[in-house]
Image 1 (cartoon, rainbow, N blue to C red):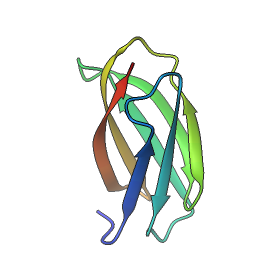
Image 2: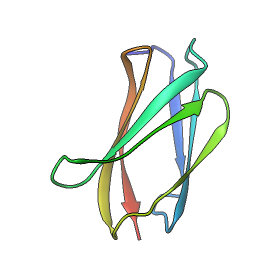
Image 3: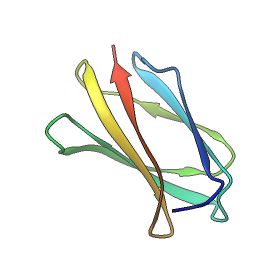
Length: 83
């Protein structure tokens, strides 16, 4: 993992658009993957460190897990709610 990394996810719960902001990692690029309740990958995209990266949630209402990685290392994991 990246020591000192922080991830801000907002708004959460979200409707159709959610923002991910990753700070405190040495790499400029990161990968976001979102999983449904069954553990299936439903979204995979890339973002830039230090920016508020918008993600359109074309997903059914529910609870999802997200994982961010950079340079093959885990940065953070969390939960989001699509309302």
